[in-house]
Image (cartoon, rainbow, N blue to C red; front, side, top):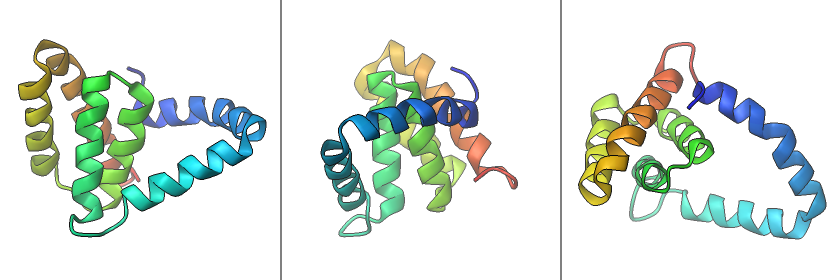
Length: 116
């Protein structure tokens, strides 16, 4: 996986084209995204870590980059993210031993002092 920040930048023009092609669908998805990842019974930080773990099981580099950034922005620690990714390894086995470290590296990229 390329650097997480580079992945997000690479996706930006593609996402813009898609957003222009199906604006109602894109807007509805964005609304759902905000609703699902906002503070509730679970803090947004925990929800971002859940999304990051799911991204590992789906082997989605764009999802990993976006949710690693989200977890960092919401104050997750490296230890918290590592434990969440450990659950992804439990549930997904071997592939998560490849994608989990990529996700942790992505998180660390955004958690760095100059990251997010």
